[in-house]
Length: 351
Ligand SMILES: *Cc1c(COP(=O)(O)O)cnc(C)c1O
Image 1: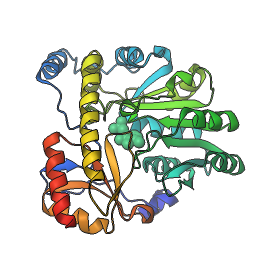
Image 2: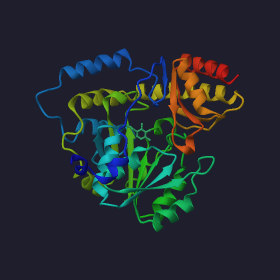
Image 3: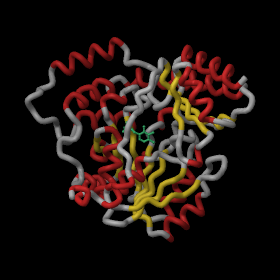
């Protein structure tokens, strides 16, 4: 029987699917509401014209890594590119986890850490954030050491809570745990206090970044892993040789040579975030949580009801099926127009 060919724990998995919904306003996936400018698009098309489609891509994605190195101020030999940071999470678990070895993940946090750890044959231990989605760092450290954790994954800012872990707390974890500490900074541009400059100092620190969120380029699948040279050389052994395709590399090169453009896009998104948060704070009977990312987590009396009503008005937000987030919705910051329609619709639903 072919069922027997698959890993035991894969039986409990569900393939990642995106429901086909009928919507006009998409606020569910933390994408940028900005489209790449016509000027950038023209440069991209020009660049794609020069791609040698008969050749394999540069396996080290050297040019993009060099540009990213300038963008974050880290030596380019400490940077590795991936097919989105998602692939880098998979590569890390593939390189570090032997069968039944454990990762630690927070709840709530990005669900892919657990997913990739388990497909790699490992186990995921979950540590609960408190009611305000803050982390008890001392307890976490005890648990990590007690459980002999191999990798700790944390998204900072946290997806879906929008909350952040201060640098002092991260240092405390790094100083007291010998596991690999992966700080996933997918939303760092919207916050600002990155830990990435500490990769030379802490031998167990790995930082992940992506072009999917602040750079309005989720479609191209480009992410970066940043760590010390020893780690990077080991992790490279688990990387598919030509993982980042030539079109993505070409696009990435254009994008990353337009740092001013990226920065001004981030400022626009932050202004819209402020607008959205202010509006949400003015609505009774809901609880928006403070956010440092491009989305807001909001507590409702009946999130399913609100979700369905929003969808009825062609607005899609992120709804959760797990218990802890049962009455929460995550709203991605949209354009001013989208945010206004969203707020108006929400007010009328709650009336
Ligand atoms: C969106 C997201 C990612 C995925 O980024 P890709 O580079 O598009 O794969 C990674 N981590 C977190 C926390 C995210 O929210």
